[in-house]
Image 1 (cartoon, one colour):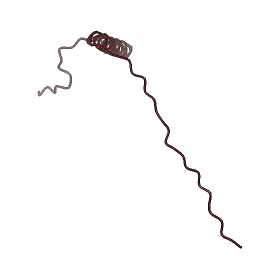
Image 2 (image 1 turned 90 degrees about the horizontal axis):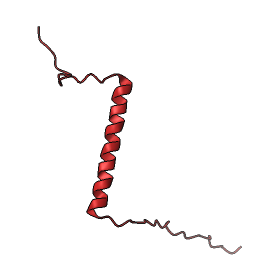
Image 3 (image 1 turned 180 degrees about the vertical axis):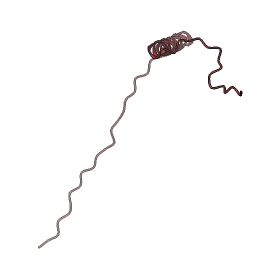
Image 4 (image 1 turned 180 degrees about the horizontal axis):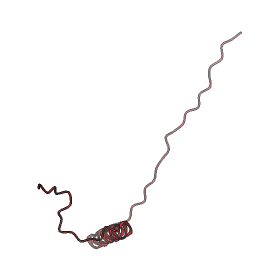
Length: 66
């Protein structure tokens, strides 16, 4: 009985296409400002939900010796 060659299928790696949007300084500043505003709003909402809106003087974690 003659030997048969194994059939092999060669695959090529997937190609990823990335679309870029031209950025200038002004667009970048607007994106950063919006990101900062979003984070601060979320932080404020989290503080309000947790009832931690006590505006302390920054003494959290300080141990007083008596």
